[in-house]
Amino acid sequence: MPQIRYLNDLKKVLYNKEWAKKTENIKLYYIYRGIKKKDGIRGLRYDITVIPSKILGKEFVKTKGHEHLGNFKEIYIVLEGKAIFLMQKRKEEVIEDVYAVRAKKGDVVIISSNYGHVTINPFPNLLKIGNWVSKNCKASYKFFEKKQGACYFAIAQKSKVKWVKNKNYKIVPKLRFEKPVKKLPKNLDFLKRGAFKA
Image (cartoon, helix red, strand yellow):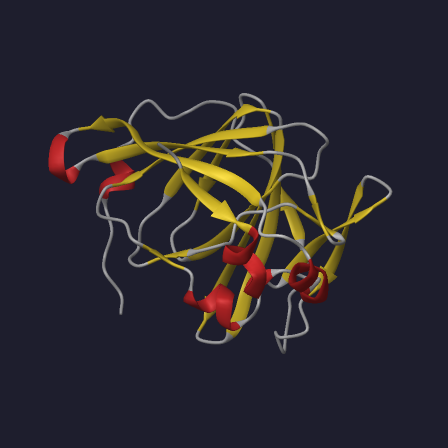
């Protein structure tokens, strides 16, 4: 059975909060955890997330956004559709770097250590992504909730993305774009290594 994220789960991180207040608690996306596992208790977990196409007020549908409690990396594979992965690195309250990766079916995106991230479906088709992550990696949503979203919102403007800065951040670096990786690395052991940071 999937874990379902509803509109109410994302109300704090949406661009158009007034719209969310007036809208029924619709289903936004589905997370299937632990579909595959590697290397026992200290190994890796493979999840699948399914994000149907929606517009949330003015914003393209997205995941809630989270950071890793520990110095863990994560790998995403686009299985169906197209995605934008938005990643931001912070030092306390200050965003030091922010970049996005546009990815299509077959592309691989590596989430670097110490980067919080959001997955966006800005296309009129269903998005399906898989991810490999350490079983010891825990997610924290606190910073995204505190700041009411990532430092940029992906606003729908005539089927294109308009990037709008989140006013709850004092300083927001210019958004840059990176390319995805074309193949999944053969050895995923680097995903197991993390150093816990409080």
